[in-house]
Length: 375
Ligand code: SAM
Ligand code: SF4
Ligand code: SF4
Image (cartoon, rainbow, N blue to C red; front, top):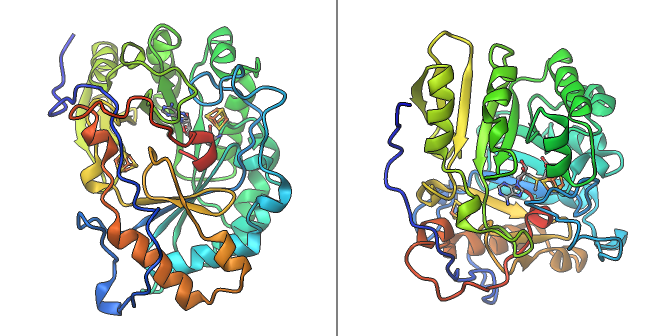
C-alpha cells in the first residue's frame, strides 16, 4: 500500500478553548475598507452555517447517541427557534460583512417545516459585489427524495448528503434508528436527477464500526459524478464517547483507496475548504478527505455558526455562544447587529483542533453538541 504524507500530524489530546463570546458587547463601527472582516488571527469571515433545528430523526452513534438523546431529551421548544424572517435578516447582515457561503444544517434541516421558504429567501441574497451567495445544505438524506424538487425550485443549487455505509446492517448500526441506506441512496439519485451540482456525500469513519465500508463506498460512487468525502471522527460535544483509537486518520483512508483505485493528489480548491481532494487516476472522479483531527486547518477557518435558537459560535468546539436572538427580539437595528457581530469576529482567536496536542487541561470541558450547531 502506498503511503501519503498529509503534513504534520497532531497528537490527539483535548484542550480548553478561550471563549470569545462571553465578553460584553462593545460598539465599534465597520468600515467598507475593513471588509472582509478579519479575526484576531487575520482570518476573514466568509462562511455562515445556520442550524434550523436541533432535532433529528437519526441517532448517529457519533453525534446523537440514543443513550443520551432518548425519549425524554429536552429539545428546543418552537418559540425558541429563530423564525425564517429572523434567519434571513441575520444572514443578510452577515453577507454585508463579507460572508459568501451559507450552509443550512441542523439537527436534520429537512425536518424544519417549509424549509423551501427559507431557501427561497436566502437564494436571493447578493454579496456587496452583487454576486449570488453560495447556498448549500447538509442533510442525512432521509427525506430528500420527497423534498429535493421543491428545494431545487426554491433556488438551492448544491447539496451534501451524509451516508456512512452502503451495507445495510453497518449503516443501520451507525444511524441508530435502523434507517435503510437504500432510501438515502434514492435521495442522492433524486438530487442528481433534479440537477443539483455538485452533490457531495459525507462519510464519517469510525474505527471498528464502518471502516470496512471505505472501499465499498468508494467503489459505489466512483464514476457517478458524486464526490465522496471522508470525515475523521471528531471529539465534538461530550456525548459521543470519542477516543483517539476510534479515529481512522485520512492518510489511512487514502492509502486504502489508492491500493484499489490509484489516486493522484489535487489539493484544496480554496484555502478555506475543509476538504483536500484526490482524483482517480483513471478519470472516474474525485474524493475528498476532511482531516479535522490528524491535520487541523484552523489557520484557514473562516466559519461562524448560528444555532437554531440564535446563538453565534466562533468554533465547532466552543462551549458558549453569543445570543443575538434577544437583541433582535428587543428591536435592535441592523446597524447595531452588524457592529455586535463584527465585534465578535474581530476578537475571535479559536483554534481548538490545532491546540489538541498542546494542552490537556480541559479534558472534561463542556462543548456544545454538533447536532446543536451543525457540521
Ligand atoms: N443531519 C444532517 C446530516 O447528518 O448531514 C446535518 C447535521 S450533521 C451534525 C452535519 C455533519 O456533521 C454530518 O455530515 C455528520 O456526519 C457530521 N458529524 C456529526 N458528528 C460528527 C463527529 N463526531 N465527527 C465528525 N463528523 C460529525
Ligand atoms: Fe442527525 Fe446528522 Fe447528527 Fe446523524 S449526524 S444524528 S443525521 S444531526
Ligand atoms: Fe475552525 Fe474551530 Fe474547527 Fe479550528 S477547531 S477549524 S477554529 S471550527
